[in-house]
Length: 91
Image (cartoon, rainbow, N blue to C red; front, top):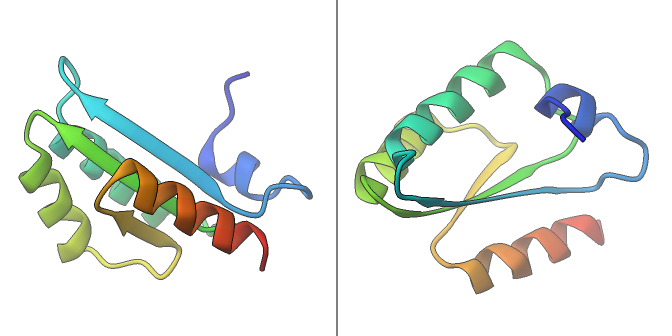
C-alpha cells in the first residue's frame, strides 16, 4: 500500500505514524529533508514519530530540529519511538 502522509494522516483509525529509517543507501539527511518538505506542503491530522539511524544520522536529526513541526516527533531510538507512537495513539 503506497500512501502519502496526508492521506495516511486522515485515515480515521490512524492515530500516529511511525517512520523508522535505517539509512544505508538512503541517507538520513535526505529522509529528513523529505519529511520537512512533505510536512510543509500538507496539514497533518496525525503526528509522525521519526526514528533515524545510519548514514548522516546527526545531519538528519539536525535538519528536523532546525525545522520544528508540532506534528513531527523525533525519537532517539527504536524503543523510544515505539513508546511515543503507542502513547500518541492512545490519545
